[in-house]
Every structure is written in C-alpha cells, then in structure tokens.
Amino acid sequence: MIHYKNGLSEKETPEADKVKEYERRYREILDRAKEEYEYIPPDKYNRDGYNLYRRMEKYMGNHLLFLHDQRVPATNNLAERLLRAYKRKQAQAVSFRSFDSIKSLCQCMSMLFAMRKNEETNLFRRVSRIFG
Image (cartoon, rainbow, N blue to C red; front, side):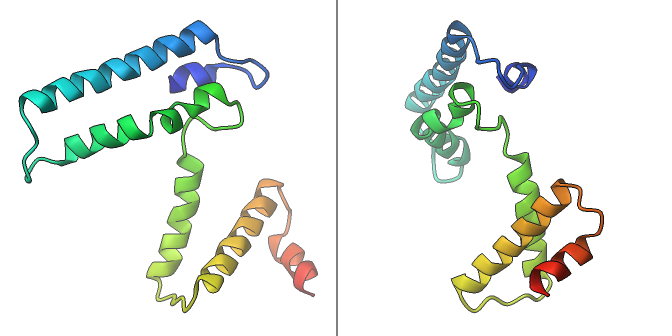
C-alpha cells in the first residue's frame, strides 16, 4: 500500500478499485486473526499479537486514511524523528514543571525545523532576529 501510494504523483488520486482491494486484503488479515484467536484464545503471557489485532481492527479507518486523503503521509517517519529529538532533550536532564513548558519546547523545535527545512543559511541569525 505504501509503495503504491508513494508511486503516485501529488496530483494523482489512488484508483478506487485498488483502494477497495487493499481494504479487502486488510480485512482478510483481520478475519484470519479473529479465527485464530477464537480457536486458541490468548493467555496472559501471549497477549501482544491479540492486542495488535484489536488495535488494527479498531483503527482500520485511521490506518488506511493515507489511501483516501492525499494530505496524509503514508508513514509517520517524520513525526517519529521529530519526537526522538524531544525524547533526547528529556533524557538530558531537562525537567518540565508544566505542560506549558513542554508546549513551548515543542513550538520552538517546530520553528527551528521549519527554518531548517526552508534552507535558512544561518539559523542563529534568523533566531536572533526573531528574539532581538
């Protein structure tokens, strides 16, 4: 699905038949998991697969949204990379005393990322102009 979506140009929309086929295959996987878990119910030691099946069933619309909406990326790699930077800051003895301070850090990191993405030549000068 991801390769298919990534192979489309920005202006191209996925073919309805192709999307229906992907949805059908996704549903088949869920049905097979359901049958297997009915035949052998999960015990307290092997719940990971069962929990994954339940999440996939519950959030099927969210998981396949990228096939229906061009604005939704096929993967969340960018979000994960940006979150990793936040988690690294948190691990470096950064202490947040409120949600406002976390929000401020995230907004600042977002601005810096946007500036970097827009190929600012000197990030320090740009930030200095904002606060100066």
